[in-house]
Image (cartoon, rainbow, N blue to C red; front, side, top):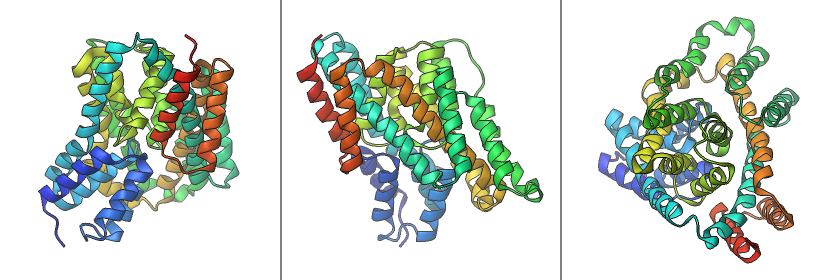
Amino acid sequence: MPVSLWELVLYFLRLGSSGFGGPIALAGYMQRDLMPRKWITEDEYREGLAFSQMMPGPLAAQLAMWIGFLRHGVVGASLVGIVFILPTFLIVVVISYLYVAYHGLSVVQALFYGIGPAIIAIVALSAFRLARTTVGSDRRLWAIFGVVALATVAARTEIALLFVAVGLVGVLLYAPAGSWTKPWSTVSSLFSVPAALGIPVSIPVLLELGTFFTKAGAFTFGSGLAIVPFLHEGVVLHYHWLNEREFLDAVAVGIITPGPVVITAAFVGYLVAGFWGALVAAAGVFLPVYCFVLFVGRYIIRYREKPAVKGFVKGATSAASGAIAGAAVILGEGSIIDPATAIIGLASVLVLWRFKIPEPLLIAIAAVAGVMLYKG
């Protein structure tokens, strides 16, 4: 049954307002809701999911824009993208305002005292689950995972060029030499759009924010929390916009709000330059996704079964999971600072491992524990 533009827009507005659980859960909601209504076919959903998994940037937003593009072209992709992101953006702006206004209160510090270790647990398990899903039993990919994790910890930062190098290693490992020629242009297209968008700008701050978050959206494979290592390197270590504690708080805000986890960008932007900083950072992180849907998606779908493309994605995704694991170690040093936070972190890992508890609920419980255990 054909779906009107406004029916699709209203659906994604509701999903963006109430969809918790991260990218995989949001993609599952789309399958659950849209296929029975015959708004998309099973093949269209599978192709969109495959495209979103192969490309850098937030998976759920990419899939939503893909569905909008299939049904109503550029206008559909544009409106669906806006309404899917807008509710969580507004929620984050409100949280950011309250955070800045009341950050000095001891109760706020106590809340995030407990939240920090829980975030470390979520990040660490995210790395493991991503690796288990994408790496599987392939020893070569586990070796890539280990090397990137160790390199991230040793360098205290994500090494962006390492992702490109590992992607090329994936091509060498999984693509016969004779299969490189034609699909290689498609692999190259992964970098042509981001390169055009990521023009280095030193000043003013808004341009720095826009440039940095555009690069983050364009080069982060793995979706969800895969963006954490890239953001940590730029936000904390390079630009010094946030300290370690504030950065962990930013990640927490991205997890506890509905919609895409990478809305963390808006929180960072707000702390750096107020409302306009939040708007620019959020627009920057989603802009590459929008461009990929409009200009690259059809070619990725066409060549997605080619060995060179599949090899590049395998290498880059295993590198992403390794970088997340390394980032968990680095961030844990600033968050797990005493026996109480160590207990909260360990308990969070065990609960997430044993039970299917929603991550926002876990963070709420950890926040309460923080208030009870915080000694100032």
